[in-house]
Image 1 (cartoon, helix red, strand yellow):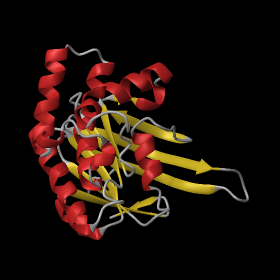
Image 2 (cartoon, helix red, strand yellow):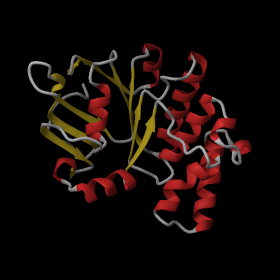
Image 3 (spheres, helix red, strand yellow):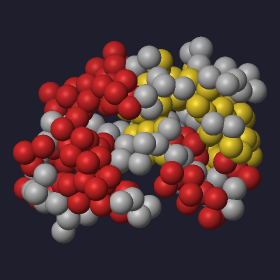
Length: 233
């Protein structure tokens, strides 16, 4: 199983060892993660499945460098995430990781094309390179005809497609998607998962996706089951 603690391997994008994370203090402390160890192979789509409150968001936040564990170790392509300072974490998130959120997280005043191009603008990519990459990604997610529309002119499924295109704009090594279909109807959710599956192949990227929806598990190369802060086979 991918959840094995093995110390890492050249073909693993993520290696996590004995992650613990607790919020609050006794007697009301919440033990979100209790000794989670896992590896995520490079270039594959791994789904973390579990009910609300199982620890999925906490786990993804730790692996993405958005939060720090109380104890344990995280390696992303050999980089010790827990050993980075704030500047190092910002660079890691900007250059190596693309995030997709349940709430889409698009900037309302920007068009679809401008939202997708934002990560490229932040790293000061040349305008020609940026425009070419944005056009390529909008075509990949099936939204070339919607480039000039703003988020409030798009459906929920279209907004999430824009968010996915933005997440891969900088050609990250890893996509982290926390309940990316949580606000979508069943048919649209399946379409978004099909798109994520296609992006893993087209962009040769590793994807780690959390969901509580069992219908989406068929898209995964591997499924990790999280319950009460622990991984189960």
